Image (cartoon, rainbow, N blue to C red; front, top):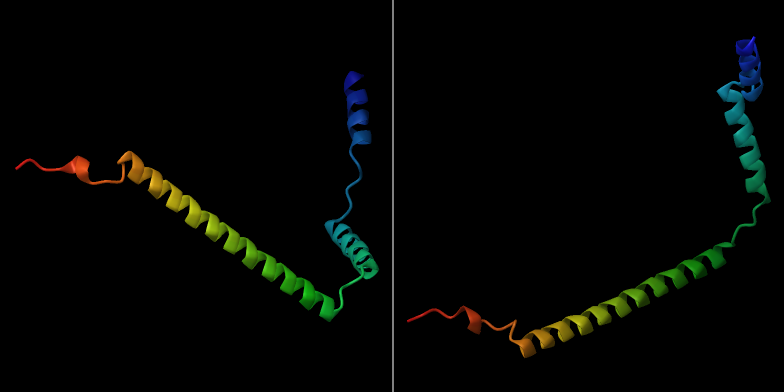
Length: 94
């Protein structure tokens, strides 16, 4: 009797399976309905926004490049102060 109750509970918990074609069609139908509700940028706005993003990326690349130059110069300066960058430690005996 307990097995019958478990089977009924499992059957009630599982939703009825629909065919995958109906699910895909329903999904596409709903998706197209939502896409129709969107507002799209005009061509001029799209070009303007794209140019702004491009300029911003170039500016950030320049900032990173300058920081890299500064940090590498700083590390080289520290290396020469501590003597780690010199080749005097590897002298050969005559």
